[in-house]
Image (cartoon, rainbow, N blue to C red):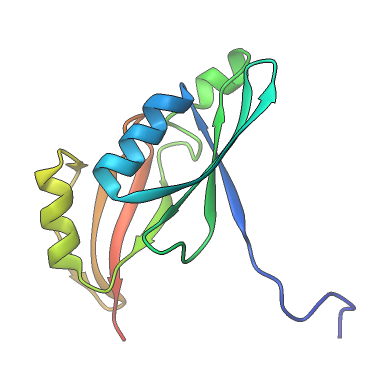
Length: 135
C-alpha cells in the first residue's frame, strides 16, 4: 500500500496550440470532439477543454502558446512521436469520416496484435493514433 488514493485517473492533458479558436474549430469539426468549457480568465487567457464524443476519457486543455518556448513546442510536444491515442469502437467508420473531413493520415490502416491503427496528424502536426483495440 502506497498511501495514495485507490481510484485516480488522468483527467486532463494540456495541448499547446497556436490559437484557441482555430484549434476548437479543427477538433470539433474534423474529429467530432465536444467543446466542454471555454472560460475567459482575463488577459487573453482562456480555460478551454474538449472531449471526444460523449466525454469519455481524458479532457484536452487547449492551451494557447505564450512565449517562444511554448510557440516552438506547438505541433511537436513529443519530439515527433505519437502523442495521443484516440480509441474508437469502429475504426472503419471513424477512419472514413475523418478522411472525408480532411484529416491527414500519415499511413494506411494496419492490423497489429493489439488492434487496428493508423497514425494521423492534427492541424499543428502532432501525431495521433486512431485505434480500435482488440477486445
